[in-house]
Picture (cartoon, rainbow, N blue to C red):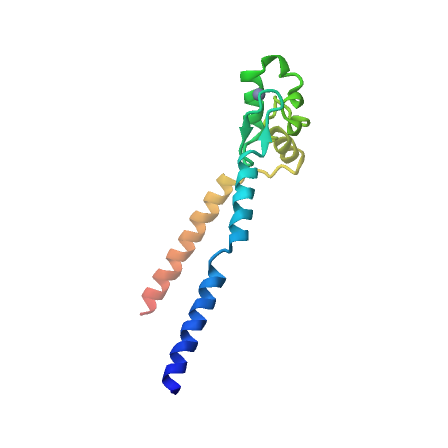
Length: 135
Ligand SMILES: [Zn+2]
């Protein structure tokens, strides 16, 4: 009797685990709804074309210039998210660059480093040969 009940217990535990691992119907529905939302995260207010949630602002702006050339000076008429978009700096790279330039400029010390490497190499070589000599 003991053996049989153990098997039943193991089976019940396995079923519990499978339920835990698998997604419930509600979870699956929520995931699908989220995926649908993500797929249409951006929608052009003029032609209603949709863009994925991970679409870059530069892509949205490209749509504006390609499809609604008359709106390129006010892309917010197509996408609200383009309100702060700067066509001259689509990825905000210039901002990052100027911030880095404002920071302290590190002097290039590649030439000096080479010398250091060389002397340390020589030192290492001397140490090795000294050790070798002792043996
Ligand atoms: Zn459009």
